[in-house]
Amino acid sequence: MAERIDIRIEDPGDSAQIEVLVLRVAAGDQVKKGSVLLEVATDKANVEIEAPADGVVEKLLVAKGDVVKVDRLLAVLLA
Image 1 (tube, rainbow, N blue to C red):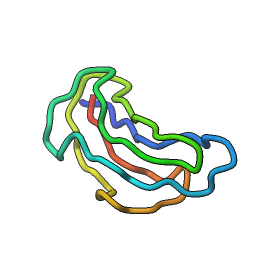
Image 2 (cartoon, helix red, strand yellow):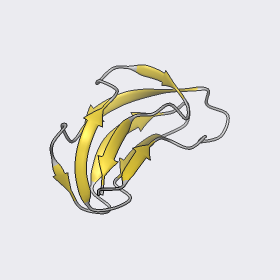
Image 3 (cartoon, one colour):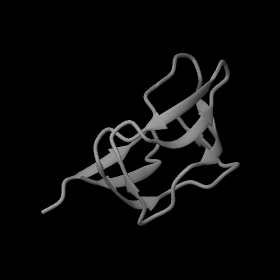
Image 4 (tube, rainbow, N blue to C red):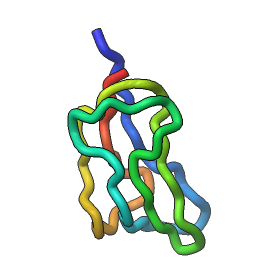
């Protein structure tokens, strides 16, 4: 059975919210560990969110332009 991995952004400092800039994958895409899944912007920097393992993107829970709270679930990976 595949392991479910929740993709979140850790608290980048004093930012309370992040904006989703770019989605690099879609649900169903195969990814390799280290592949960029999406890019987000904090108050201070743009951050690339990478796959922590090889797997399949089960679902994306955000869209380009969304502004969400830090530590919100962004995507689910099945590894």
